[in-house]
Length: 252
Length: 252
Ligand SMILES: NC(=O)c1ccc[n+]([C@@H]2O[C@H](COP(=O)([O-])OP(=O)(O)OC[C@H]3O[C@@H](n4cnc5c(N)ncnc54)[C@H](O)[C@@H]3O)[C@@H](O)[C@H]2O)c1
Ligand SMILES: NC(=O)c1ccc[n+]([C@@H]2O[C@H](COP(=O)([O-])OP(=O)(O)OC[C@H]3O[C@@H](n4cnc5c(N)ncnc54)[C@H](O)[C@@H]3O)[C@@H](O)[C@H]2O)c1
Image (cartoon, rainbow over all chains, first blue to last red; front, top):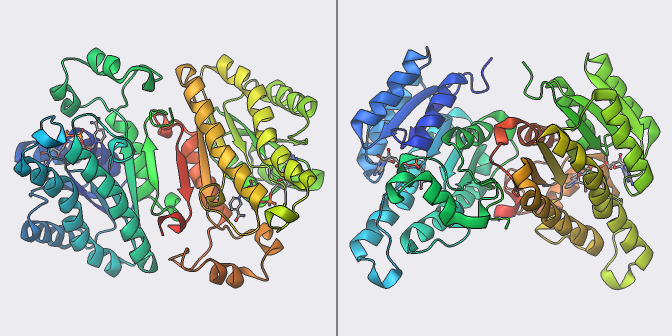
């Protein structure tokens, strides 16, 4: 018996590394998964992988900052699977490093739009479905940089701090509807996203110095396991929490 | 296949509500469990319940603040089950409700002896066995009162704040040895302990308004399920975290 048997999940950014691993694990644990991303090829691949493993999924190409497109995607999910219980939000914009004064306003706006406003828009459309289903679990991917500062990433830090409080706000307002909302703060995770910003894995480990106590990066699957816990009824009293998954990075 | 198959767990306060539920769930997930408490009758009951359900357990009567007794209890666990992988630390003194200037120094010390020094002693003697085993997971029970102050509980709140930092310190120092340490911060959980300061459970919920937005208390099993996640390899990149399991108490 899978730990998400009978549940329907909406997973944004699932063409990407972390949300892709999460969508696969959700599928393997018995959920029917709607895989959403702005990049068609990648999200089709994730859904095809889940189907190939004998599990339920379909892919939708959608920009999370587009209110109408998100509404249509949520409606499509409910049409396909009858309801919606779990929402995993992970879309993020890949911005260049700048100190604040050097950051173009448009770049700031893009980061806030995708990383934060996108989560608001998705939540806005999944909540009524969760109310109809009698409850639900929203899992928003923040970052350790929503808790501590990162160099030259003012918009990312601000957006990820915003995600953290957005989750708490949903948790407080919708507890009466049995809807839970939590954030996950991953430490550095071995993903193409991270490799795109750095020459090599070794260079990343070196750059993070003594805070990466185990001299290793996390794996997307380790975030997916945390998401699985939060999505499942095992976390029935967990809401408004910050799940920091960073091997003690921010404890130091 | 249980989620804690092949693991050996040492559970303090296992004669009590939360740790008792945790010991039972650990065993149901396949762990061999040393049930430890200062009250013989209660801890024997927990161990015999586990055995009656077909699980593996031993009961050990031990005061966590007694260094020799703790050392012997841990040795006994390793003799019985061959190793030690997981420690769940939950012993707490039932402190009186008093504002600081009316609290006797003896009662302050007693609270610290059980709630935090006891945890230090258990941890001190468990670590060498985890080093031998090549990994381990500490789960230390703090409280929302380790993050928010409760009225007239200066010693309890201070000791529960200390639990959070003890966990982080262990997380940082032993990460390179693959030993993880996390705190759980439960909100009000429906246990006999709550009736020390409240007439009944409705009284508890009312007294905590607006902090319990779902207007319900947690159940010991909801803490136990979080502990299973933290004890298992599913949380392999999670260490030094404060796991709030509080129905969004701390979010408001
Ligand atoms: N990789 C890390 O070390 C790390 C650490 C902390 C937090 N995070 C967070 O985890 C999440 C996932 O990151 P990842 O490492 O898997 O990155 P990734 O680049 O592999 O995935 C991000 C995905 O988001 C999609 N996306 C971007 N804009 C979108 C939009 N407007 N609408 C829909 N989809 C959109 C991209 O197409 C991509 O597939 C992000 O929120 C990121 O900030 C990652
Ligand atoms: N019940 C709640 O609402 C709540 C909320 C937050 C945190 N907590 C924490 O959870 C933990 C368990 O609480 P509970 O509600 O299950 O309480 P409980 O009173 O049922 O259990 C506490 C147990 O600790 C044992 N104990 C006390 N002193 C000891 C000592 N010196 N050595 C060994 N064992 C000792 C007691 O015999 C008892 O069995 C405590 O740390 C408590 O502070 C409880």
